[in-house]
Length: 464
Ligand code: ARG
Image 1 (cartoon, rainbow, N blue to C red):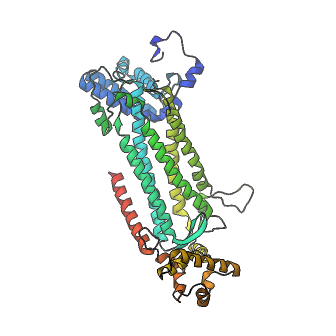
Image 2: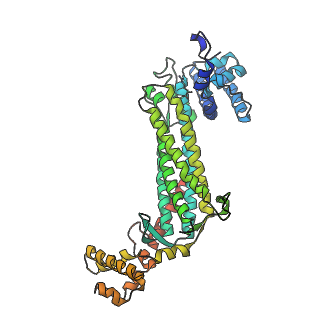
Image 3: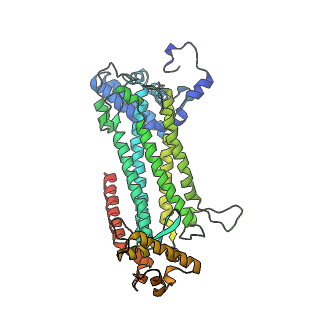
């Protein structure tokens, strides 16, 4: 017999039952569902809606149900539709008719909302831990190669010399914003929806604040229709996941490029690479390629739910049952990707000679030539023009700027003095970019020091 069977004159079609059932995936919310039911039962007993004895019997029964779920012996049944009714049915078998009192003053609509709020809050914490671990791997890498010079790129063309640690610190700060987004998401998800009933509240004298305090919620929803209709917390989680995935994907893309023979800036550890079934020489960066690829899934999770939620009327609609696949998938995917990326970074080798050579054997200090002339009073636009003509001359004569003589320099502009040769080394180029946030050693050191402080503060916060 269905828990809602009273009104129905005939049994459900098997097809419809299979189509509407969510137990195959919402069983993942078992522990949240039981925690919510325990808090609800205790509150019902405390305020006298049921007796304390009944409340105790229900809570003990829920403990037994939880144990079965944890032991893997719980009989999940498709015909009981979802996790809420599966648990209630089993509770009835274990505790007897008193189980029928658990659903007083509650609906599955506020129940699922509660489960998902609890789940999103927990997952925000997991993602935050995983972000901190990746940030720590990034900082370790920066510390190890604080001075390594590499070409910085714009448009994927060598642009200006930069420091590897500076480049990697950019990812640290991107991850820092991701962390903030998950903390914000958690804060907004911290509203307790139970007590909304189906949509309009309940006729019983409930005390939702008790439930909120037992479950560790910061506040209650102010409006019961909002409480059961709202999936913003899931959308925010997915949006934060999508942005995070975009950052991981950009890093993954760089690691793929850098590990190619053409770049040769890094070598991935064998343990995080794979071979080819046909080409024996191959060592493929599959792990990072898949991190890049899984980004598509996470974007899909966000867009999928945005589309589900678009245009559905208040309050609860069954469309909303479709919110779980994407949520579970995105949470698992970003946590795995963060974890794998940390391991890849921990274990890869950096070829700093190769990076330095790539930065030196090129024209990436052409801006320094222009800056040199501009610092001597030539308007920057003219200085740019002179440096551009010099680059063209070098290309025509197969030289780099450092191969030119002082006379060659002075043929282009008489402001050049012998100190131009110092100005166009990659070391000087980097050293002189000492503006706030720049790639000069002392600036990188400052960024690194601040990043370490941020990570330390985060660790303390996460531990308490
Ligand atoms: N399984 C449903 C979901 O995941 C729970 C709420 C169902 N409420 C309802 N009236 N059908 O959204």
